[in-house]
Amino acid sequence: MLTVDIRKKLDNFTLDVQFETDREILALLGASGCGKSMTLKCIAGIEKPDEGRIVLNDRVLFDSDNGINLSPQKRRVGYLFQQYALFPNMTVEKNIAAGCMEKNKEKKKNLVAEKIEKMHLSGLEHKYPSQLSGGQQQRVALARILINDPELLLLDEPFSALDSFLKWQLEMELADDLKEFGRGALFVSHSKDEVFRLCDAVCVLNEGESESKQYVAELFSEPATRAAAKLAGCENFSDLEWLEGNRVYLKDWGIALETSGRNEACSSAGIYAKNIIICKSRDRENAFAIRIVREIKDLRYTVLVIEPVAGCAKPLRVNISGGLWDRLKHEKQLYASVASSDIMLLNN
Figure 1: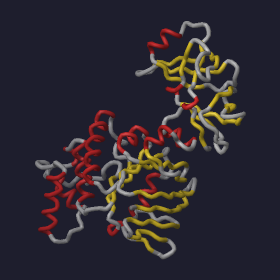
Figure 2: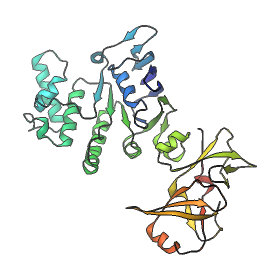
Figure 3: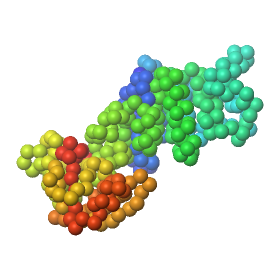
Figure 4: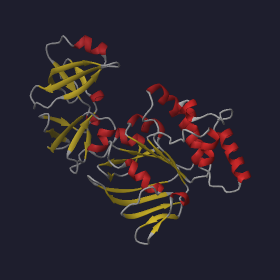
């Protein structure tokens, strides 16, 4: 079990993070510069929070009130850096040995050999990082941090510098490694796709402040805030005003739509571009007349920029299959429809 409750003053904001995690892969998801990597560094002991408390499996790693701040070597936390931080002038064997804190030479040698075999690096012992593939480099870096039997892994955007094909291969390998490790990990990313594929739960950081932890599936289906919805990939947002029943007036688009429930604590709404249906008539739920502002071809679909005919000027994005759009594009009047269950009610 890891418990984090820390504050740290940074240049543009104050990092204010609280969460708990236990034997799961927890993603810290947020835009660049929101404090994700700084949070990992505070847990690892590389940076010191201004105040707060960090506890791992009943061991206090940091406590500002009681003057506790364990060194990185005593925290039993494995930190995988973005670029793996391998020593370029050291062989695979020596890179792994460099991370080992065992003092007995014979035991250290045996531990290195064990990790080389376990991470499928046999035959590469005398190779240098420049002679390895990206996957091999990642496994060397993992072997180096696993050699000290850490209680927690910290992964800081491990795929950020890779091309998409190599990234896919390494994701599959890392997923297997994390499953075998079994003690839990924190995974820093700004990629919703990586989080969806690799993680169990997610904690969104918005300008340094953490939001409540959610299961990954909940983040994409029921994000609680506008910031979380943006990170989950939602493209359309509007401030709202509550009308009678479950009906809301969406101020940015100048239209009123029916929602699936009423929550007056929510002040904005989000709609995924894929959940807006383009049709030829008003005979669908929440249908409204539209004009097409722009048409953009994408590899997987056509992107339409639309405006409600009776509404305001702020446009909406719609993702539609190329075939369906080819059949509809010559109609004189088109409509957009949104199911009430697809209108996400959000806190700002």
